[in-house]
Length: 572
Image (cartoon, rainbow, N blue to C red):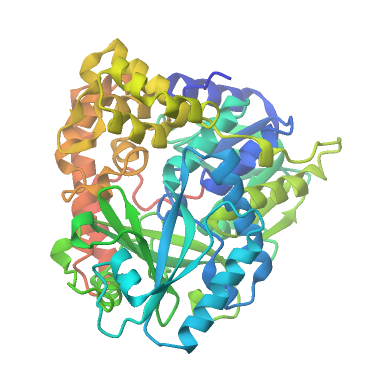
């Protein structure tokens, strides 16, 4: 099936369809769950619209630990069902749904107590393997002290008695969610970003659609739908207020901060998982970098722009330095990113204790709310939400088929990977570059290489971000729905967390490259470039502040003069 390019022309047509048609389902929210809901519904034969106030995955779904995993720490909470479910989804993603985007990664659990810790940790990881009935990944293994240091030379040898190694999987979370949205569009859904829900429409007490403001043109339309599904994550409460009905669901935001450091600062041949007093801390391989995270603290400030404080970064450095032979410092950090987990609120005083399981509710006729959950189980959440909505459609709706539905780029991926040498020669690129492109685009790489064939200059690396080709940023706006410079530098690529200047050097060139596709003039290029630089300055300045309140205030001081929507509530 030919992919649908989510360029400006597609967006205009999608909004026109939304304005003129009634849909079976309107999905509010374009994170991984919302995009999953749209794909589940449209693949059952329903007519579907989906709107997102910011960019695909701009909230939680682009700021996770980038892991597809069962949740080893949930075994301590005896949540075997959640772990088994997540492991089943992990295996589906690795083998059938998205093998081009999800890949295995090994983790080492260092041991510092000779007997009881090896028994305790080993038993837990053995149970983790046992719950994975598919046995897609290698089984865990116990390592001696010598073998642990061979796998992780940067570990502090003092007090180390051995380790246990196991496997999980990782993903570029933002690209995955965007690919879900593209796959939904490929099957007929009308999808649009920068389209904010400002209110819900009711007829005789029933929710029958939503008022949607196009943030690009400032025009407002009414989208009619037989069912509205609210998948807005940490904004669930705010969307509930629009309906004057929350159905008893409350979501509490937990802040998770991650840092990236250059790969050569830590010598490891595996990822690391460490216990902390609150949860766990990961050190995850990420191209030329390591991702280290995460924190788990309550957040009640700006949900659109959560920021890290110096206390958050000090916490991460302190915890990872406890096991490293050569400590990391603030000077070693290339990038920082901060996300909010949408946890179902309960009586727990600590967000680390709140549930990661999801709930589907129907707070009003015509309205379904899905909340909670974890990234790995997005597909199950989406299926459950559509199941509930389908009961009120009045017609027979087929069961979910997404467990058998490969995402865009999956079909033909293995064949193209086997032909990577030929692809590289044809495009004038080295094989390693094509291999990396395949892990980002899968079989859709032929579209990216087609841009280079049409304009060989697009096969050159970006200035200031040589890991990416010029063709990739053009493709981001012509096919992947990026509308702003931030969308390209933060989510379609990961330049913002992989370059020490966070993409400031590349910003001007990227803006110039995407301008013809987006219809920008010189003033638009200048304004977008300055806006991105201000965003980076605001985040980096906030990271020097001692606590959340001062960090949030510092970010707002620098950023809000550049933000055309400052002070407005991003609901969906």
